[in-house]
Image: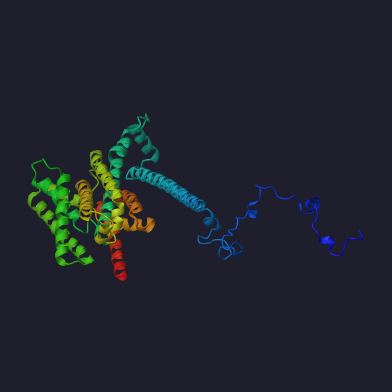
Length: 433
């Protein structure tokens, strides 16, 4: 006790005292991550005669100099982790897109079913929607509901077939407008304005009245040839007039007037009085004589045109920026343009041969769909087809009910809607330019 001096209380304590004061020493190999340290590289320590002190930080990791293979392995593991996370994100986004698309498809199907039901139930003789559903169940699913034969005949043979053909016609004309507006880069492009509908009418009238083909050529084929001839004439006229965007519209107006005049000349010279009355009413757009055989022709045409448009949706996106941009993206410009124009002409020709010339559907509907889904054609194409189908079914209902005891040509109803829309689009385009 006497030998202890000042400061001896700061001497090193025994191990058992240190354990009680600060806890036991950490077990080797089980240290916390915060306590782990990378061994310091002393190869540059002046005491060892190897240069400046401090670890090697050439790559930002002290362990790389000691073990380059381990550092490379750590970097590879980090990259793989990032790739895996990116793939998981992409997979989840795709699943969400598929789910969203399924939801939109279900909603569109329900909207079509409701539209068909209303189109079949509304008319001069109101028929309950339940009777419409039971009639469809009897014919499609073999049900045995007891119905009034007159009401069942009106629903199945007259109104429902008319609604199906109207929906196919509206979808096909709207898709034709989408194609022409993308290829020509003109917001006013439309089968009716560009004279394609007029050319189809001339071809159909030539087959029906002049007897071209001797019965071997159908009305739809004659309308298809006439629509292609009209578009070729308009394209050549616009090319000779110049490269301005407005030239194609002016050429279309001229071509439309020319083929309408040819149609009127053929009808006036060769048709009987009864034929003249029927053809003039048909040229304004008429669904009165439509039956299920016409639906069997209109439905495949609309379905094929929709599939072609969806297949070339990305190409249509590229064409909106010009043919040079499309070619730089690897698109076969001439082949794709020819195929899409043929699809638009085919859809227009088939619908004109069935219901006559209906204007402004291909002009108004694509612009209305763009306001809802945007400009990407992967969404614009199905939206335009759906809106066009609903629009023409509703227009047909209006044409049957707006005047009691009479049926207006459906082209009159669409023109009353489309003409103001055409003026609005024209004024908006002039302001933007």
